[in-house]
Every structure is written in C-alpha cells, then in structure tokens.
Length: 157
Ligand SMILES: [Zn+2]
Image (cartoon, rainbow, N blue to C red; front, side, top):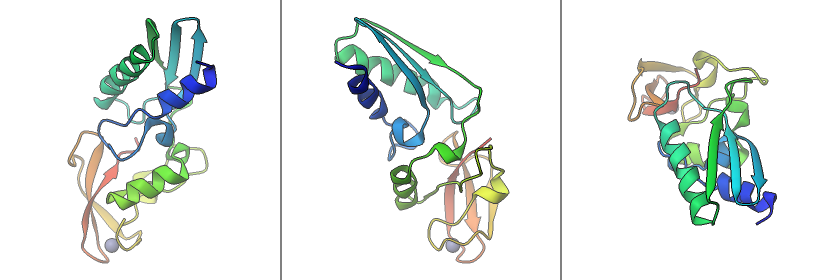
C-alpha cells in the first residue's frame, strides 16, 4: 500500500459517536507515516475528554491491522486545536441530514457555541442550549426558538 492509500483507509474510519461521518470528514487526521509494516497515525481530538477518542484509536488500529500492518501507533496532538472549520463539506452535509447541527466556520479559531449552533431543521441561529449532555458525551442538547425543534449539537470546546 502506498502512503496515500493508507491515508484513504484511515480517513474512512467512522466517528464512533457521530456515526454518519468519517474521521476524514471531521478533519481530525493530521498525519500518516508508513515505514514498511509500521504505521504511525497522528490525530487531533475534536473534543478534549471525549471518550470517543479511545474508540477511534482502536478502530484505526483494527483497520490497519486488517490491512496487514503489524505495528500501528496512534498519536494525538492537541495543538493546533481542532476547529469545526476542519469538517469537510460532505461532513457538514451528513451531520445536517442526521439532525446534528454542524457548527459554523469560525475563521480557523475554535468557535464559541453561541456563534456555532444553527437549527438543522430551519437554519435559524436563534437557538438555546438545554443541556450540556446530549445523546452522547460529544454532543449537547439544544432547542431552536424559531421552530421549537430539539436537536443535538457537536460540542466545540
Ligand atoms: Zn428551527
């Protein structure tokens, strides 16, 4: 396998919490280094303390072991911090289709939730956070004041 093929393989690992998007679409894969049967993957966590990171790590290892790599290491790098700007266009579309508010672009900086969250149903930015804890640890529960639709939003800090 070429390095480009290994990058493609790693990018297809699904986010274990969001499911509808891959880690490639989330933009968390920073680097892939291949030396014979050894691979080192560097990722940036989307949300510090998010328990999904351990699952992503083991999913990457499983995918690469299945592809014949004996020695797989997954490193995390926290700086620069992941930003929702790194979510690809297809990732944003899939999140919206799943009723998960894709945070708005924030100019390369981590965005604040008040700027980030739009209703996935009607697009209104007039939303309020109901709970820090949504259906999973990486999401919080929001409600749209315009159409009253409750929805999950990806935590961005
Ligand atoms: Zn709405």
